[in-house]
Amino acid sequence: MGKRKTIFDCGHRGYGKACHRCTQELIAQQQSVELLAEKQTQKQEKEASFARDLIDLRGLPDHVVTKARAIIAALSENKNYRDFGGKRLRHNRWIVSIPVTRNYRMLCEDCGTFLIPQKVLSHEDYNVCKPGSH
Ligand SMILES: [Zn+2]
Image (cartoon, rainbow, N blue to C red; front, top):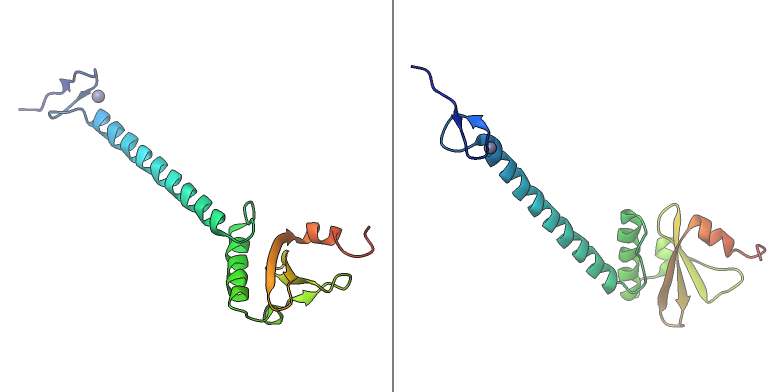
């Protein structure tokens, strides 16, 4: 005695009590809703972490943000900028430039006893500010 396919309310044909196709679709739908909610939460958490930063790090690559935060944290503990390869600008001794990655630098203002991070610039942005270019 072979099994017979049923026609479900949804119009699909199949075996068993409920339509497998519609059940699968429902599960997929629920998963995508959960994924979307998760993505939104991640986005909100990311935004909140940017709001906590001393300087605006939005729009920078993730690894640059991570490294910049590590430098900011170290500076706040009064670590020496020279430990990170930081140098004073030739045309403004009160500004210290610290390499973040190969392509990004952080400019900090020297307030005598501590450094205040000002900005993270890409290599291209930074070169515009070099002496002799204006
Ligand atoms: Zn169905």
